[in-house]
Image (cartoon, rainbow, N blue to C red; front, side, top):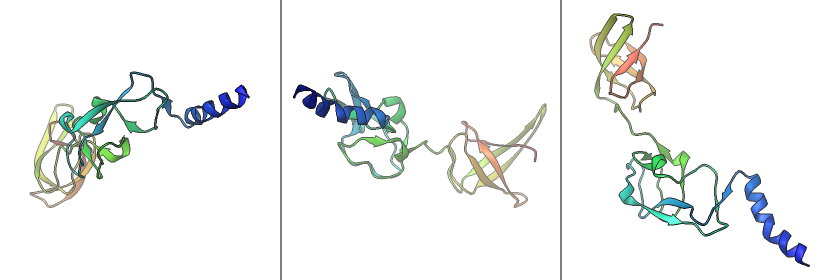
Length: 155
């Protein structure tokens, strides 16, 4: 009789572990929205609240739970209060916005060529974006740098 009870209690835990989720410890804390967060809104710690999970509560995989995973990110879809925040519902903040002028840099050794171009799409640091040279009208791709410039290479 006790084996059946024990098996019934441990079965959900075993399934959760196989699925990649980890059971919450008594002190596990997650951050969840305390109000509706709309697409395009930047996450700040002021609009999130900490919730301590009950022992045995399973944290689903691919859920952002720490402040470092959330702060400064932008919502890609509506996030509801009291719900976990999926990592797939977040993106990095744009460094360059579509339609804004940027400095485009080509660097090869000591040779540095710069020009002004207009971005044809928004991008975060490290993203490849299309830009149009204002002088020639040619379009090309480059990598967005953290300082807001676009770096291009020889092709």
